Length: 476
Ligand SMILES: *Cc1c(COP(=O)(O)O)cnc(C)c1O
Image (cartoon, rainbow, N blue to C red; front, top):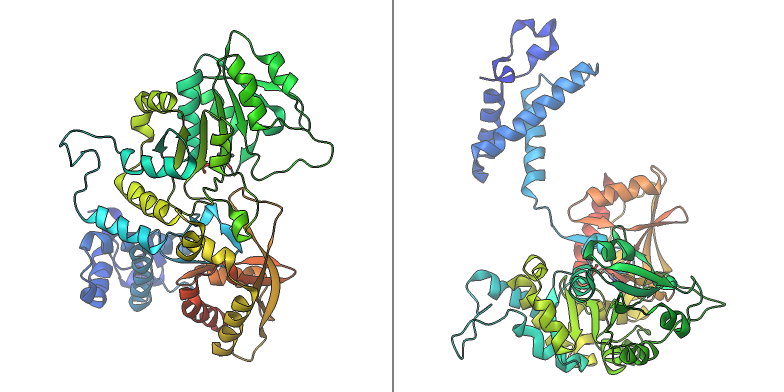
């Protein structure tokens, strides 16, 4: 029996508050009586009980005389709160009110219903992941999406890894371990937290050869750097940062022409990776995979969960001989994707066969393309549905600006509509905290002393729960 289990209520509680605490067994039994309908394993209840008792002892130690540590009903409530928290899975629904469509912290692209259906079917049973059903022979899992990726990009071959960072890592490790890779100084980027190009390069075993300056790099800079040790030329889409003004960069087709004369491969990391031209839908001007392939890039790399609107994945398209080398690299086994990702990716690629289909089917694109009138109408309906307590809580419909995020089109905002919340009783920060703590959690954006919930990133079928979540926060 551990020390806390020997503690139990006794008359000594008056003198020693620790003694007023019930034992683990007492509190677990009391909780189980309340929670019996839920039939939680006893181990879970006991773990929560131990946590609550540890908190109580800490409160007593820190001199909090008001703590209700001796009230068994109060303690049972605290244990139940712990259990409710534990029962919520780590990835419960969150309402994205940030206005950032591709929000890495919130899991990037929501998937289409076609992709969700594909995941459920693949997850529930067995699938022909690495078996060719026609021949009965062993196949490669990338075969499930290879042809479609080739159709969409015009490439000879294609493969898939865990994410775009992995795509770059395995590409460099395959083409240039022990060799130099030439990159413009204007493209030595860091993207969100831990992706820093020079570090990925170092991890691949290739050596970075920087050329040019931050704002200007010319073809002659690349030409001058090519030597015996050169393994590849790399071009990287700067994604979340822009150099404007007195600038010069070398276009991919010029790099290709130079590299050909030296028999070197050119790798183009296009980042967000639009597979079809978003400009056709008035959604901006991001690099398109097919354009790079047609310009002669040997390998083009991009993410599956940015503009593509699919699951987390790194797509590698380009020349067959290089794709085959990559698939034979030992890192492939470590970086490969699972059947759920392939199922979702394959379904997403079906939608991308036509921009209009994609705009109808992929939530990311539907949200980006929603009209201001639509958003405003939703906002008004929500305001009408909210029964606000009159005390100091204010809700307005305001114009705002949403962004693609995920490194795509950083300077191009999308006009949007938000619900703006303020309270006389608490700061906008406290309000934001309340909404984050609700169920479902709502993540908004603080701006000008208000909490904004941008409706462009709220999925239309979340409107009702959003109303309920705001209502709950206002009454808290
Ligand atoms: C986002 C991005 C990456 C990293 O992609 P992940 O899929 O998040 O690993 C790499 N390169 C560029 C240019 C990017 O924009």
